[in-house]
Length: 239
View 1 (tube, rainbow, N blue to C red):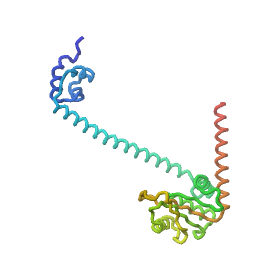
View 2: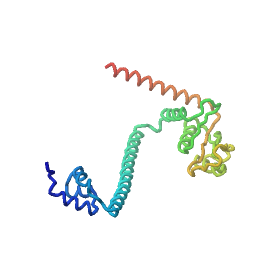
View 3: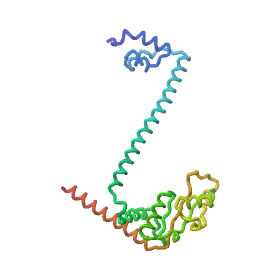
View 4: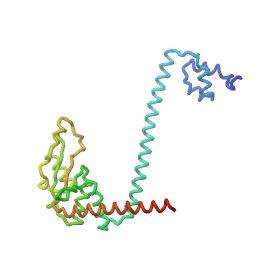
């Protein structure tokens, strides 16, 4: 049985011999690619045309990758904007002036990042925002003055202690004299540090009672929420 495109076979073969790609021929003549591939099985192409087709394919691949990156970036931007909008909505439903909510947030943070076996209340992080929150909550909830806060830096071997102290002092609005001698990690010697990395800063105050209270709050909250969810889930399952 003859193909319904049989009357265009010679034209398609001629286009192929002149270096047209299968895709171009398919698009121009409307012939299925499987049919064209069968017709072109024994159609030879010159070295010149093979090189041209490869160059076109390579260029198309580069263009496709560029477009794919643009698409993925656009999708990421859209997801980030959605996340931001959802975060705004959540924050709008929280009373930021409520000290119980503020203390709960601090307790959850402390449970994950704070010192639990120290005789002081201390929290370390490489993100200034996390530490600014910790400091502001110590002031707001427990009236801890900056003068009672000590700062410890853990740095990589190639970092300049004086320069890093100036950075953290400015970022946290804590006087340089509150900083103790930085600890340099000798294991990192010979390996360059990323410019944006400013080490880990630990903020400590001697009031261990704050630590105990925060850990109790966090554990009680997590346990109660977990148990409440378990009971609720069991009720739905049995319904």
